[in-house]
Image (cartoon, rainbow, N blue to C red; front, side, top):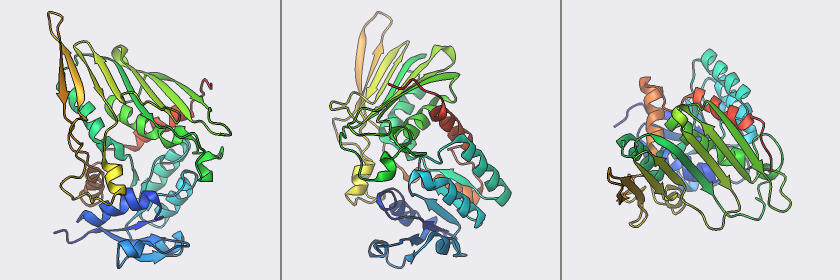
Length: 343
């Protein structure tokens, strides 16, 4: 049993707080979910009795017992709130996108160093079951030298989002800053910083003021080509992960079940949590020396966002480096900032 859990506060209790943060902070023995900011409707205590509900961020940050605060508010508020957290002498975990520019990443990194505190990026989809399959297949070497990689994150949502900050042309809005951090982080965590890249964005939904389509073409050493694509107007999704190498190919749909399970109230410690249903396996096709192709069903490992919180704990309490480096987030921001070929 952990005798010194990290006292943690959430800055909001919307979908992100309820689904992606509170269940893990409550379940991991290394954390104590102490407080939350709720300006209007006081709901969190119904789910977590004993939780302190503060009326403002300032009141929560004035709590001397809180060591870590989670910034899970609208994207355009991340930088200012994270700055306040650090200046209050607390570690900060920030939802994606971490901030809205590479300059803001640099400012937070410098402030964290001065305050002797950590800035943590919440890039949970490194621990999706489908992406873990990709990692395993590449690590196995069965594909040979990688030539071409495609990652997609598609939805079909013609109607504009009711949350105004997502549809207003302000820093951090639009699909690029919503799903771009997921795809870019997966690519960067797998392959590192590209040699150079090309970005394209487009606006297609009636009345939209922000991009609802984007693509990146990332160029890596040894000729590796990586394509990242996301759209809000895909009625028939393709495979979300497609890899081609000199010795074979791999394809996998976006099948991670964690978000759906969490929304259904399934707890991270449930035995069925993170396990894909039968029939959702990827397909690994290996070419033999005589030109024959052998397809194999490739089951996914367990998806487990708890590993992100375990990494947080190990960094704060034991000084073990956090796997999501701020340098990688800076690269991500630089890629999103680059000029694009708008459609």
